[in-house]
Image 1 (cartoon, rainbow, N blue to C red):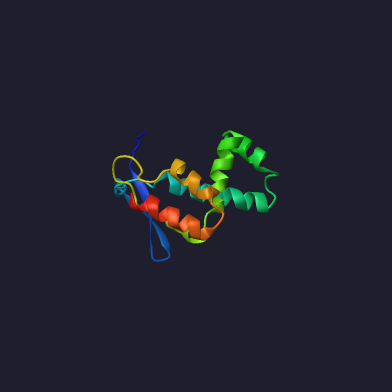
Image 2: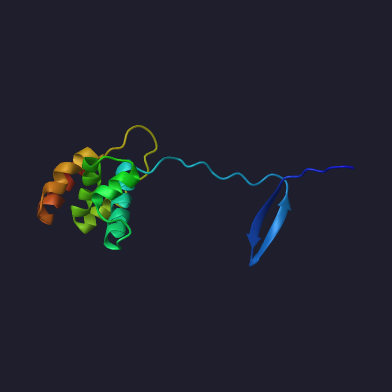
Length: 130
């Protein structure tokens, strides 16, 4: 009995899926990474949806499920207190190619405590210009 082993990968061309022999094409390596504050902002939005839809009962349960402390969950959820345009800018920060993130969550804590969006935008401008 003879056994033949081949590498096969599938690709979609048109509306059909086709098997192609040989190694799969190489995917390009990402040139950087998404800033951590952008990920935290996305998490805060998702967690807020889970709370509003009743999937989780409260923030304490959410903290337990996410394996973080309640104070840390509060810090993450406070990002939802930012003006919508600031939230959008945080979500679409440029990719960090090397080194540390230019904007991090600790910088945003003072910003989230300002209740007036005008004041938040002024403070955001100071953080962004650093």
